[in-house]
Image (cartoon, rainbow over all chains, first blue to last red):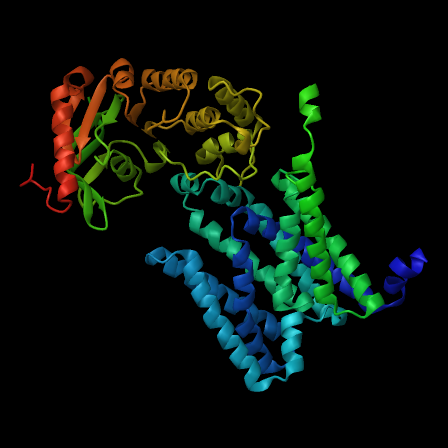
Length: 290
Length: 247
């Protein structure tokens, strides 16, 4: 029974094993970035960037069909252009970065939908929007794992400036010229992980695996290390559960994974020991005793 | 005595609207100077100009023998995100940035100095606390510990004692005294006359333009304070025309 429910799908079907590996790679790579997005009050930036990469991916598709390389490069370029352009406008004019980002991603999204509709059939659009986690080939898996590794390494190198850029940006600017570099490196990591994520989960669902586990982790840990670990663990467990649900009940796997992450978020709000609803209403006996 | 800072016909402001006008003054090396003046007199603006965050509209600021990195600055309303999960020891350690940089690890010697700085501000035992759990006074102590580690020749403090308990204020004044004894140049924007009279030998009074600068007992007179208020009120009525003609 337990074997059939939890292990047989992965033991018997290669595509399930590939899907799981792909999801784990995306989970490990994207969640730390999601934690920093959340800590910087930039959670919606992830969503905006996910929309921004659509025209690049669509253009890649237009040029060379459902090609991994072309769509990846297209997505990366579109994401970087939007990130740099909005950052640039925010630095030289009075317009704040969130407003200029919103403007650029909307332009980008409209362009993307236009490109997709000129040629692709609806099936292709569904591929780009909702991903193909059950059809990941070797090249796609290598890409997902490489992007996750690059993301973790860059994050490790830029950890100190990034923490300071989040916690005390004024101080970072006063001691170092790295503030702008750090900010754009971070946005580049967001784009990188979203592009990796859209191969597995689609452009829309990729943000989910980045943000939902991070938001849920906030109720389980108080330190940055704890937040990142908790978020990655929640993302991996959600991927596993979501894939199994989609296997047993024939559900689309991307939305299934994100919905499970959503349920994890809901449970965390209620049960999480750090500021969860129950924790807040418990009588503070421990403190009285000590 | 050489000047740590000289303001030469300095005009600073935002959107072409001057907040500090035609300031001529020299801050001697190793001096302990209070900057006083009514609200809107341009005191904070002046410090921002010294840090380089604000470029002069006219004139210039000469910084004698001190690199930009040798300036430590404690802003009035720090942009610190108190909800960010960073520990006291981590935020204080950032004071070593000039030595350690963005990527190197902290050695044993560095850690020891962080401990010493924490002890100096009375925060031993708070290392593992997150900054969100500190009181206003404790947070200010932590920021002073970070300033200690910055080991700067020129220290700029913008209203460091706002909303701070008396005990903390006394301790932090002790640290300012120590900086003065070590020959560092300290500039502090302050509101409380008693603090200025008791602890700051030099005072620069500002009301967009210079009112007076020199030994505190000669500057901090009721006559000067009255004049400063009048000058600021005149400016507030006609923000664009408070140049030389109005003065």
